[in-house]
Image (cartoon, rainbow over all chains, first blue to last red):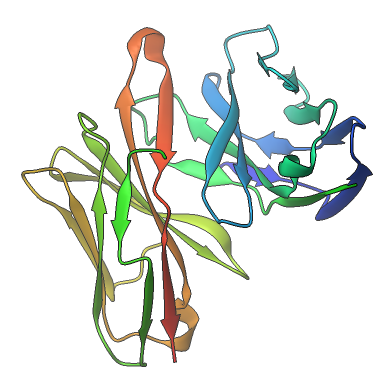
Length: 116
Length: 115
């Protein structure tokens, strides 16, 4: 069974700093998808970034980027120039290859506080 | 706004009761997923429907059931409610895009409180 582990329950950084959230996962699958979701106080689940395991290039979305290390089964999220609006719970998530049991498995989350 | 709607937003009920949560997927999405977010268990997959048919089950209790109707909306039925069923219930929908890209869009959730 697949598992997703986020080892940092809570983090705080100053506004404008760079922060990295860690995530490791365990799977025997060769192809899969990895995601970072953001859940602000409104509780809405918002997709931040997505990585396909067959792609070697790390995904980037504006200030958000990932460091995907397939062999190490590591998938960290880097937030550059952090903003107050980045304060939220962040979930790392895993999904098997499309059309094969495509439920999402979530980590326990990291609560991120951006301090003014 | 993800385009996925869920009703009601909040639901307060008593132990032993039965409730129905409703989800309308994004236009054109055939898949609907239900997730439960509780304080102690985090976000857990419950069940997946594709075009009206059950496709996968997760850690869904026998007291819970779901269905997807011909118009693709879905309902999650929770019966014989217990205090531990208090949680945020999310619905998500998806469509397979070109190049195999796959994304689930989450609704705003229904917060269920069992007293």
